[in-house]
Image (cartoon, rainbow over all chains, first blue to last red; front, side, top):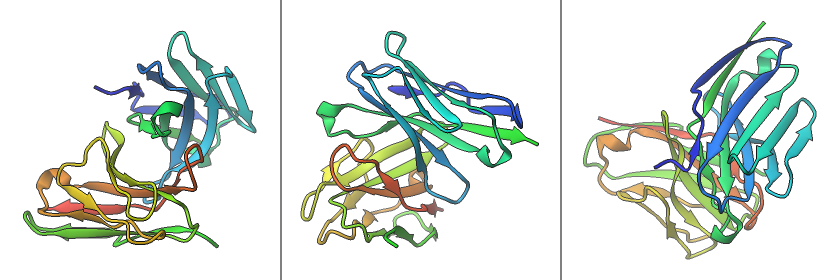
Length: 113
Length: 112
């Protein structure tokens, strides 16, 4: 039973437009959320995170929004660039559980020039 | 530069063989992790270690073992490889609880 779900396996957007990647979770103990980006034949790399005490965190073109009541978070990329084409993993952790990461299944983003 | 490496990058083996995947990090991180990545499942935790001589089971530990004899290395052993263990394996490390995990480049394992 997956505690972190990314319901869209793939997403295609035009260069310059907004990309919105979604993630849902079921475990109410999760209090820290992360997005990792993965290129083919490479390991995942940390992109951005948010604590449950916030509802938004921004880093350049990347913004993560957290809706605790809906147990939903999203990653917005504005503007999207071809180099953003990758698989994006949402992950969650709970402070009381050793901060182990639970990952979603990933969303493959394709940004078309 | 400090880094985390995995070897081999690709491995093909036969059912029933013992296989060991290596993970080496030069950050002097205390915590190390092994994950497997399968389509639709994301990354699932196999084993982890908080320090030398410490090992713990993760979500999908059956058929795998690890050992931690020093800070830098956490080898993952498949005692008797099964076709269900065909996957991409990632090692990760972090300095301590709450820090970001850094991932190695992965090992693609095929069990025939």
